[in-house]
Image (cartoon, rainbow, N blue to C red; front, side, top):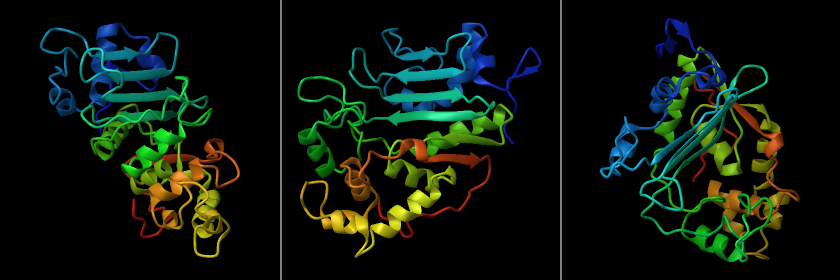
Length: 273
């Protein structure tokens, strides 16, 4: 069992409660959400959040009066992309929700899928798309929305979040997957569905030979090749390309994890990423 977070003998139960604390106490609590060795690998002190030159490279956005936290770490000063970014929030019914987790390899090639050809933000491809960069990213083995290769730390990060949720006294916590591949990854981590399981099962069924989605893998775009039905990443790119007839149904898919319990849900049996 995770130790409860106590401040002057008072147990912390929410982000809003933590955010009301003085900055030093607040930082000490949220510090546990970043793997220490991820920071030290890039010369960042996990306590002071500064590099060897004393420059602060980790920013905490946790304003008093809010139930939201964003932690963003840069690998180097003035680097354009985060090494690490985590966003979480309190829900209206006093639960904890993971909104975003990013862990980028800053030494890997960058793909400008986050900007279109005019430089306008794409909002993960939901508002507009940079098709040339998306195709390059896909061929390099990235999933929709990724601007750089990851550092294979997501499973470990998930455990830190779960320990944090348990320390706040939560028996469950929530997550909204931003894409098909995110939903499958969360299944592998032990999540189940509040809503969206039938949609995920339908997607799997219709990617089988003869299915509605399989038939749309007609080679009409680089993201609709027949072999894409066989992998998580391939399916996710096809869905990102609009094969469902709509964007990824983010509002229809919400997941939860029971602390210390693996739900055993699998909507893509024997999946290859």
